Image 1 (cartoon, helix red, strand yellow):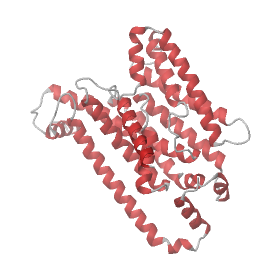
Image 2: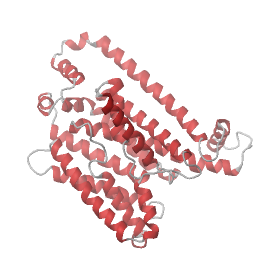
Image 3: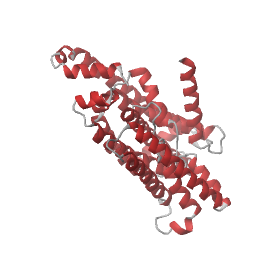
Image 4: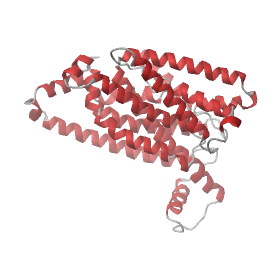
Length: 368
């Protein structure tokens, strides 16, 4: 892929003398990036506050703010809300909204890295078997709880099984793709498709032969949802995101070089095979952690990088941080829709993101 922004960046690298001339432009770009990031952070905070008011029980922002402040600093505000309202805000809505922020940011980052390192605009976290592996792990526990539940605590049995399944499937893809002399993007994609269909066939078989009374729970998990979020579990996706974000940002220039082509990247000193291996391994860890607590939520990792590139170009120094924030925003509002469209019932958020993602790509194709 010959990307104009990458070509400019590469030209700047090859001509040291041009770096001084480009300083004013680079400073302007940094200021613009800082402004966009600050604006998106403000939009995300407002979205979290507004989203908390939405649901089968409407709440005022003043009540929500008072409950949160009183929880963080006890006895600072006189209680004029009910126990039910407090439970809805603190134990139900805030954990799932914060999980939406973490999962949305994580999946968007992974999608951006995978699309860059494979030079494939259709690459996303689930093209490489993560959702199929996580589904196999979760379905195994849901339909065979008597066998596995005693091994783990009840609250973590499904997330642990889903994480192991997602991680194992992506490592299987990596192992298959590494057979031979090089780790090419084509081998990664073909291996991912093969593993995905193999694991999904096993999952479907388990559902077919399993207890049909609990099969609905397994299918509901596979559709993706944030309703099971708990404060005690948020730490795991939070740690994964905090570890992955700075590492991925440090890879932005190398990803730009790979997007310009393997030969160009090698000329610039990038070890392409090693970079692909490292990116894929980190993406496997992040995807496995996110999917373990949210189920298979599709289209976030595929759609968000495309949206961001429309506005800021293809430079991964900009695309990565902005994608993380846009992914968080997208999933927060998708979850708000999931809670309100058929209230008081919850719609699986994966259905909402699929509708939005499908419509977005139809729009893109019609526009072109």
